[in-house]
Image 1 (tube, helix red, strand yellow):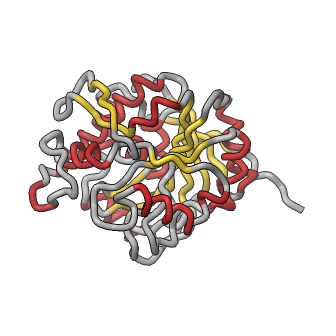
Image 2 (tube, helix red, strand yellow; image 1 turned 120 degrees about the horizontal axis):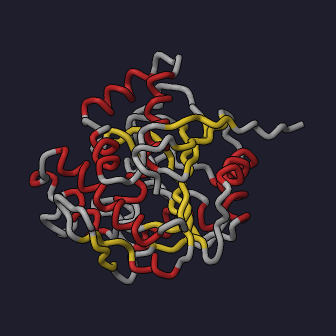
Length: 302
C-alpha cells in the first residue's frame, strides 16, 4: 500500500473500450495470478448504468476471472442469492463468467487494526477462495456516500449483507435490512468504510489492483433501480495500485470536466461530505491523495 507521503501513479485513458480496459490493466504492471476475483457491482434490477459486459469481458477472460459480489442489506432484487444471480444474468454477467455471491454461505471476520468505529469487518466468506482480487469499479455518484469508487467497492461491495449493515451503522448493528432511521452521523459511516478497507488491504497485500470506469455519471449508484438521469459526459478509464489516489483522481476529473452538467455530481459529493472518506483513508495510511497522471494511449481501431 502506498505511503501517504508518496506520489502515486494513476493511469488514464479517455476512451472506454474493451481493448483499452485491458491496456490500462497491462500498464499497471501487476499480473493477476491464481484464482482471480473480479469485484464489481452487478447493478440493481432496472438500473441501466452498471458496467457494460461488452467493455469488461475481454479483461475478465484475460485473467480467467470469476465475477464476485455480495448480497445487499436493503430491499430489492439483490438481497438474496437466487434473485441476485438472476439479476446478474439479466444484466449479462453470467454469460461471460462464473458469478460468485461470496456471502451465500455466510461471512468471515477480518480484524481492523486502527478502528475508531470498527474492530472487525465482515466480508463474504468465499473471498478466502481467491488468490488475487481486481477491484473493477463503476465510478459515479451515490445517495449516501456522495460518490462510489474503488474504496466503496472494497468496503461495502465486499462486505456480506450483515457486514454492510455493520459499516453503515459504524459497528452498532448487523441487522438486515438496515433501519435507515437509526444510522450514525455521516462522518462515522464514511470513516467506517475506510476502516473496512484497511482490513481487506491487510489480507490482500499486493494481490490486489484497482480499475475504475468513469461513465454513466449519474448522481445515483448502480444500487438504485431508477437512478437520476446522467447529466454529464463520460471521463474515461483510470487505474492505480493506490485506491486512495485513484478515487481522488476520479473526483478531481469531475471538478475539472468542461461539462457544465458536472454541477449535479459535484453537489451530490459536497452535500454528503464525500471526501472525508479519502482524508481518513489517507490518515490510516491506506494510500495517498497525491498522484501523477500517466496517460495510456488508446488502442487504435480500424
